[in-house]
Length: 493
Image (tube, rainbow, N blue to C red; front, side, top):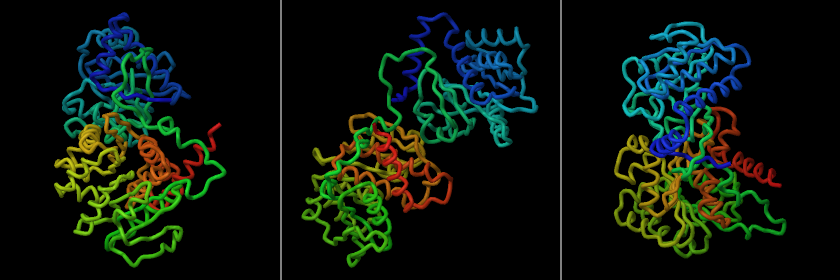
């Protein structure tokens, strides 16, 4: 099932169009009832003690409607009005609550609680939380640390729904779950949004979008070409040749990690050129790898795909290597130091943007992306989607901006956000593994979209299959990723 991502501007247009067809307050009523039904079904096996913290806008109105519906489900519900409702529909919802349940409290009071509903601000917030709202967000976070469940309505208050960053850098509400309305928002799935939102459930409020979303969530439907099982009558020559180029002095391990990952993900033959260890001829842990010390067009022209940059360094040999790899016509993945070299050499930057029809994939982490864009990593993180799309357009390449909620951007402006992953992947070498995985799929003849979206999803799935936040090392990832791929193929009818 596809999940489209809609910007705030698109949602405003959708909301306005629906509001013209429906009686006033209909969407707010639906939002409150849908959220309450989900909360009751997910957490309400017994009578819960609930506080709903309401802001002055329509998100606060959703909160009053949700509180009333939760009370109908038999829960003990209290409302807190941090400011009087300003919007008409919100004021009506607050009046209905007061008429049936008494006036809401004006300040947060300590009481035994099971669940807090954050209904302070939704997609309309444009400035950092301050004053009573910042205090409320801090209180909600403190409740969560004490084991109280937190559910946000539409968007955790303080989060930029388009960008996935805290507005003004001021941390807001951290939720265990977010009931979001009309459609999924990109900011809920990347950057700070991955920590702020918890589980995300979407209620479309019975409104059908008439235009395409701005992006998509990544999932197996986008790389369905990976799902058919291999033909029984096949051999290693059926699955392509891949060259891994990198491994400067003291960094040979990075190239080996990428190469081992490529083997696990099914590349037929994997060659390794460690430019800082010309005498290396065997990997004792992976003797299937073949070593070459002659990187150049003669070797590279024999490959279906190459991966360059893992442990490459930035010296003259590294620059010459990148120059040679940019001249190839096979599919190529540029990772790590290859990106840093391109960012600091204007001639290589020009060459990287003039690759004709050859498939190119760039896989930067935020700092590498910042170097390519001549900005800071903090600026990249404030708008990860824009940074990824800008780089994809600049280099006419597929771009993977790694991190929590990795952003994958296509040269034509399309983008996806990946939702698989685990903090366990935050360890040295996992980026090298991802580069090798992408290269392996390219070498097998898969198109760029299938190779990139599939590898990123499987890489994240490997972190999830590990099961914990720590204890995973990069060398563990390829086996877990291969298991995830085989699980997809087993499920194929």
